[in-house]
Image (tube, rainbow, N blue to C red; front, top):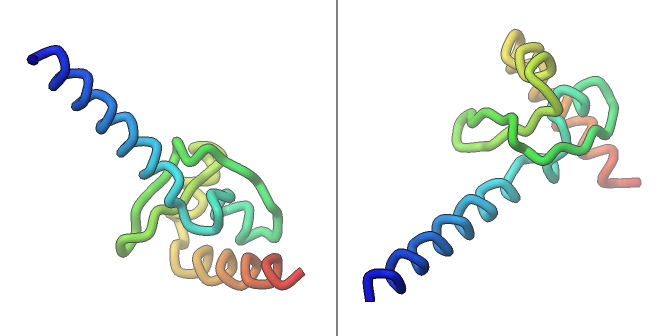
Length: 87
């Protein structure tokens, strides 16, 4: 019985982790890349949460660039993502 509970717990934890990773803004594209007008896919392993939204990054440097001017980068990323979605 304990083994079954352990396995169930491990499976639920793995499912929760996978579910969380799939919930990045902009379809898991790099937020900094989008702000610069580029589509850069990520696995969202480097991310940050701002106001309940998870932003994904392709590396630590793009994340730092985003953090240096969050308001401007967020606005540009949203504008560019919206344009990309209309194509």
